[in-house]
Amino acid sequence: LQQTVFMGRPFTCTPDTLIPRAETELLVRTVLDHAASLDAESLTIVDVGTGSGNIAVSLALALPHSRVFALDISPEAVACARDHVQQYQLAERVTVLCGDLFEPIKGRGLENQVDVVVCNPPYIPTGSLSKMSAEIVEHEPLVALDAGPYGINIFRRLVQDAVTFLRPDGLLAFEFGAGQEVLVQRLLQKNGRYEQMDAVEDHTGVPRVLLARTAARTAPTAV
Image (cartoon, rainbow, N blue to C red):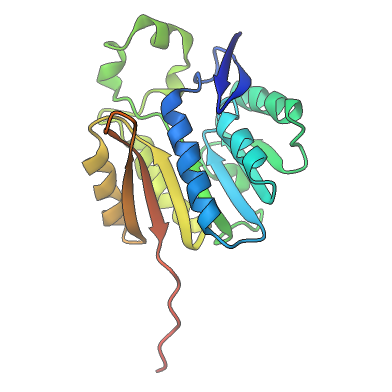
């Protein structure tokens, strides 16, 4: 077990979860900035691929009027996230569920109801895993790192499936790897259901977080 600090709070990482990184704090801060701009009495947030639950817990603590669904395909990661939800006494507002991407929240009445979908997905191309430092590859689960030959497998599904759950003018926010900005923007453009795409740069000036809004629902035209 390894202790790490994320958004100023301690989290325990197991070999089954990604170790929270400083880059991911940028993702959380970006979502918090967006939430501050909304005049909403309540917020529904879905954290896809929650891992240790660090994003879900951090958002729930910063947004007391939020309800968070934290999802992960790994039962071990889900157990770790649930431990953190208990540790921070958030069981009433954070629900941790196990399954592939959005599967766990299907049929829960969340279609077109979610304000924010946030995700720190696996985005390292398969071929790059062998080049990564042994520390990362040996101590972190490959399912949380490997994203297929171009590093965008999970993005493709995330972009496609998020629109089912996001409300009109809802926000999709996710982290991506260095050099993947054009790829992920093309995926969003090709989908056709997103507008207002923005890339947020980290402290070194490298784009690392993508924000996209779903199209606002337009009034039906009179026939």
